[in-house]
Image 1 (cartoon, helix red, strand yellow):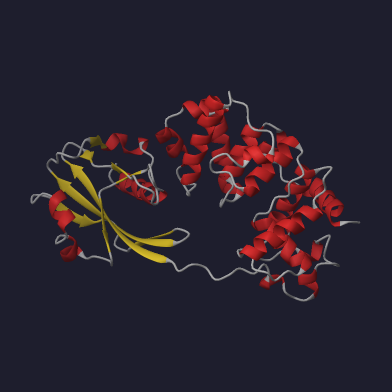
Image 2 (image 1 turned 90 degrees about the horizontal axis):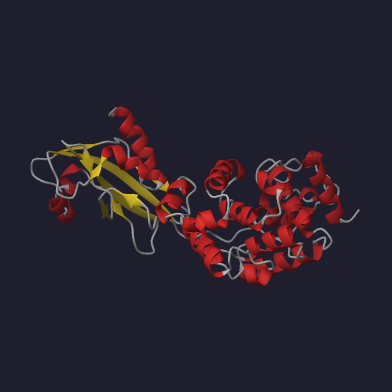
Amino acid sequence: MIFSKKLILWYLQNKRDLPWRKTKNPYFVWLSEIMLQQTRVTQGLPYFLAFTNEFPTVFHLAKAPESKVLKMWQGLGYYSRARNLHATAKFIANELNGVFPNNYNDIIKLKGVGDYTASAISSICFNEPKAVVDGNVYRVLSRYFGIETAINSTQGIKEFKELANTLLDTTKPGTYNQAIMDFGAIQCKPKKPLCMFCPFNESCVALQKNKIDMLPVKEKKLKIKKRYFNYLVVKTETNTTILTKRNGKGIWQGLYEFPNIESNKSLDFSELIQTKNFKELVTKDSVLNLFNKKEIVHKLSHQHIHTQFWIVETKTHEKATISWTDVNNYPVPILIANFLAQFLTRNN
């Protein structure tokens, strides 16, 4: 039995029951694919259900304020996905009259959509023979065929894409693509794959050569950058605080945070109060306390953020215009959301 037929047979017996698989509506498939980039299905599923309930059509999503979209996205990370999602929804609603593009070449032109997402949508919704290649597919193909080319190299990306297209069942491209993704997620897992019960265990090169744990191969990662954030959490006697919106092209664009003093190393109390920004923000009558006794390390893909939250209690502050009762209405990074959950629990 050829690879694709055996894979589809496995899928029909083992596929996951997921809401976006019950429709060919490209809006829902697109939404699910964007959410599941860099995100596990178990984590993304509640967000998908919340989004489709709040925004049942692309018009609903397009009309929503960006702050609401970001707030609902809070916790999924990689917030550029949410901003691109919103921008694309507005483009489809306003420029395309709500009609989603029906082919790979037009879909890939949409903001935030790359080869994988365009291939998934065009094959699942419009039966276009375009093979998907994501982390699951890289893992399955590299192990089964014993390919040691680095999957994040230019050569590897080209090699795996070409191989994926040759294996694709062109009569059922959507089914095949979902089959190989599920197979990688359920059967050929990154760690402790279920080789004993695998339908390909007699022909898998990695299994025969005992290289399961060595494949796929990745080139060395970029060096992780360390950053040091000192958040000043203002609390006035009238129960107000300061939140500022992050602008620019860095992390968390469009999200809100407390005033932040970024330093090149961890700061203790005496070092913090000597910084220029601290002196400009904190009045002399303020009382300062460190909330987290142990530094919080928030890990992003290419940077680790070492964080301290300093509670600044003061009578009044001219910039403290946001009531603490409204703080949870603002979209914030999960780092700050986790802090707020602890802080508000202690103070209620």
